[in-house]
Image (cartoon, rainbow, N blue to C red; front, side, top):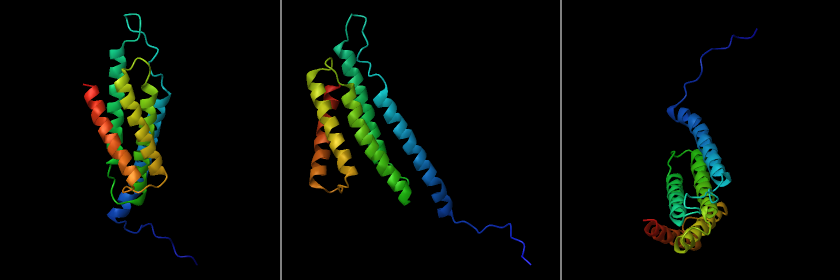
Length: 169
């Protein structure tokens, strides 16, 4: 004779409850980040838009590039400083989103550059985008945070970001 099964479940601890929702949330954040990066890379850059004066105006392009820079800088900052706790899955999701923001941000900025962007701003944005791309690839390649080459790239990117900030004023 088989004994009837109990309908009671073992008590779950708060940490297992938390772990149960962190992974799906981290996955959802990652999917949204990938979708936004893909949308940003695939949407038309607007470089073919014609202003009412008959041609693309440099001021409009400067504003678009400066807005893109601000968006990328905010995305990288947000994703690299996110804290979802000590759960390994959550930490990996944060790291993946940081890499995505870094690599996608570099490519996004490069896709916004055209001949109507003032030369000094275009050069600085191109340099910053290249630094972001190298930083992201270094992260994917497993470079530790204290790697001298990675640290140099981060310092250069910070200095270039400050220059872009000044040029965008």
